[in-house]
Image 1: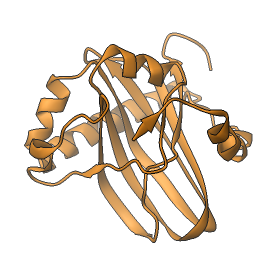
Image 2: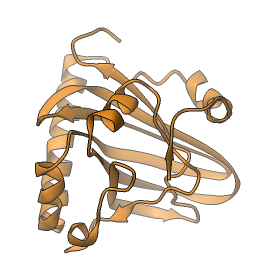
Image 3: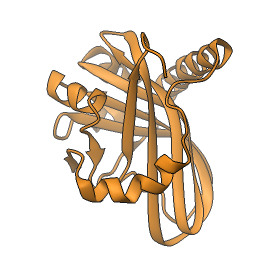
Amino acid sequence: MFQKFTPRLGLLFTTLTLLNCSTVPETKADREALAASVTATIARAKAKDASLEKFFADNYGYAIFPEVGNGGAGLAFSYGRGEVYQNGKATGYCDLSKGTIGVTLGGQTFSELIFFKDKERYENFIGGKFAFAANASAVAVAAGAGASASYKEGVAIFITNSSGLMFDASIGGQQFNFKPSNTDK
């Protein structure tokens, strides 16, 4: 379900990289707004499904993307920015990008929560060696959904707050970037 970054995935995301979206928010106000949005996303997810608390309590680290935009017609792109945590403390900023070619039509936004069970998965994520395989899937946040969810290959993924209409809503093929919060962009 998950794989380390490979050159084949690099080619898919070259176009998105050219857009030069910064992983780290530009201003202090933007960083504070992102932090508030992450906090609100966590609160909404826990309110929708209290059983998610087990993932917040039992992880090595996690990444929260409050808003991922996804849209296109034939050629589709997704982008979202978030924060990464270890031991409940923010360690840096992350973004995700995805590009697809095929039968895609429409647009949507959603929040994505990714939990890392162990140090290896967390280190792969912050080291840029983490991407979802094409067939990766996520659990939709709904009352009780977290109770039956589990880590798969050391990672658990949840999607919530979806809006819009799109023919393709998969998470497979997402690529991630990470920048520690104590460094410049």
